[in-house]
Image (cartoon, rainbow, N blue to C red):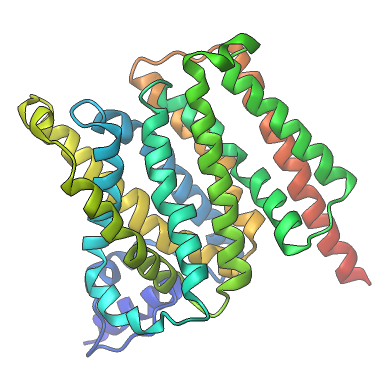
Length: 337
């Protein structure tokens, strides 16, 4: 069927899946793939970034809605475990690719990039707004740089050092809201978001440098293979009686399931392939745009954003700009040489 062949070709461009019509198990994704893009092209890389920013920028408000009826442990556990369930067909196809050489890296990607951030973000949002969570998430690129320098022997330049320092100053402004004492109060929960973004920095470098021979769907499915059962065990020992009695049980559950399907599974397919087609810093640059979507959703939901927070995110963005500006200049110098 010609239409099927076209869809499969588009899907292979997006997700880097080795496919044939007899064994392809992601036909539903293939059917919508013509609406998506070819990540081997620069234009579509930027569109992919916007797509990820929209999805992940919406994740914070979905977490907030999930927390109405569920505890943070339940929100995170359901998010991870449901993603694992959705990916069982892909896991059955790719699990043999796990071996002694890559199992450690896959575990690092799964726990640093999926498992622990899910719990840390959900815990943080029990005390901070979804807009602030989104703004703090922009620190991920800075941590990606730091992790790359420390563990992957990347050499920092003056621009990168200044960018990292500015990023931390901006993050501190976001945490404290202009009042340094508040870091020891309720907003100390914002530190959980920063810890999660450190995990993202580890994750993106591990994918880029230690798993270069795996495509996005393989990295995503095998990561969920290692973290999904752990989330399921946590859920078994969780008391759902309060959630079941809540009038918001179903809306909250649907929010979490949507968070899992779009904010974890589909977005990670695209993100992990974006890393392969570009760089760790470019891929994590999506976190610069996420705050704007998070703020917009927060404002629609009645949250407030003060001037200090706006200044804080501006400083973070300036720091990240300097980090990536160095990246582009170095590429130009290498090309000229």
